[in-house]
Length: 75
Image (tube, rainbow, N blue to C red):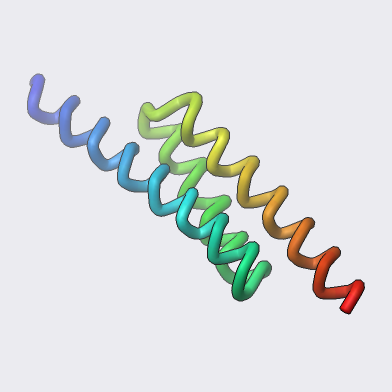
């Protein structure tokens, strides 16, 4: 039973980390594509057990999408 908990926590942490990477990519490259992917990965990470960081990753993706679209509209 302990190995399934470790795998679940590990999978949650991987989803959260990839969510933060997508937030950076949403800010720099494509806000819609990477922002939505990162938002989903952040929520999945939070639901799987990485509670505070998963929600922070989801929030970072929303902020990155909005900021990137604001910068792109100003150009």
